[in-house]
Length: 59
Image 1 (spheres, one colour):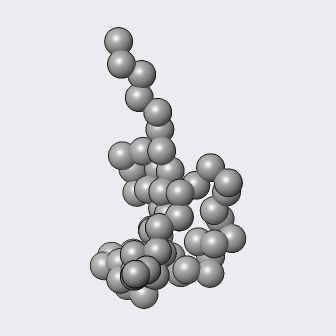
Image 2 (image 1 turned 60 degrees about the horizontal axis):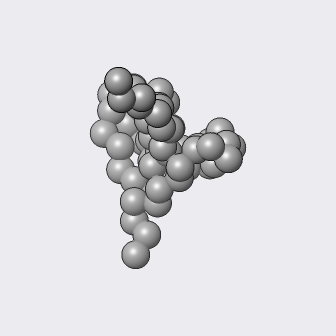
């Protein structure tokens, strides 16, 4: 049996298109689930050491 690990990723500095928050710039994905979306500032406050943070506009 294959054991899958659940990953949590935060994508920041993005354009997130959602009717829930039309000005969202960050999104939190917990495993296969979109768990949260909002501003970059709020996202940074929510991120833990286990969260992989990805700046989508980083070069």
